[in-house]
Length: 115
Image 1 (cartoon, helix red, strand yellow):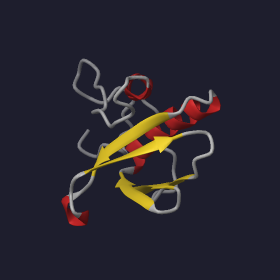
Image 2 (cartoon, helix red, strand yellow):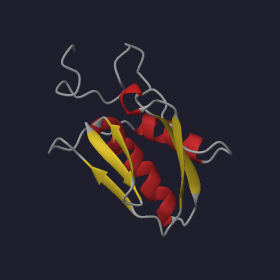
Image 3 (cartoon, rainbow, N blue to C red):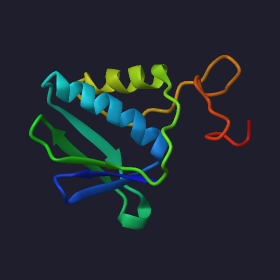
Image 4 (cartoon, one colour):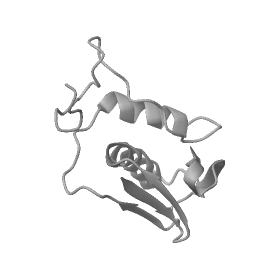
């Protein structure tokens, strides 16, 4: 389980595979100097609720990963996340798209031991 840290104080635990995909979308938006909001649901263990942050080129962001290996990238998931980032409601997690067999489009057997 990785961590997304905003401005050194707002922290959220996000699974490494999802965090990798979020990082790709966030850094692409920032390279283009496109500010946006990013919202997520908080786990009940930290009080529940929802958090939204405003991300802009001067934001201090940290993507901290628990695992040491880079997960495979699902381009369809990156595109789905980018679509939300460009919407008025801002970036938020969406389920990973699957292929016709019901397996995530770029499934790595190590990421999905049930395969």
